[in-house]
Amino acid sequence: MLTKRKKLNIIKETAVHDKDTGSPEVQISLLTKRIEELTDHLKVHGKDKHSRRGLLQMVANRATHMNYLQKKNTRRFNGLMKKLNLKKRAA
Image (cartoon, rainbow, N blue to C red; front, side, top):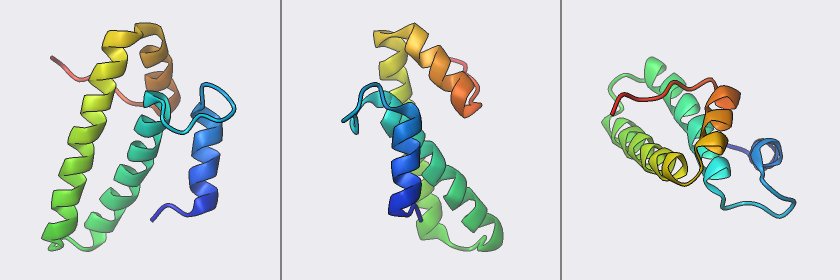
């Protein structure tokens, strides 16, 4: 689970401006961190089907945000992918 402190650090690292909390970059970063934490949880608790469903929903949500950002601003998208160490999906 993301604590308030972790969340603020992630927002600080990827924010476009001072009071930014809703830009695609911030949303993708937060979703990525939650996905990483939930993936670790599922490695230990393999039979947790409800969390697996939530994970799949988060991955789909992140993909939607990534597609939006890629269409709107490719340069910002590429910079974010490098920063988060994510690979581009094949279309």
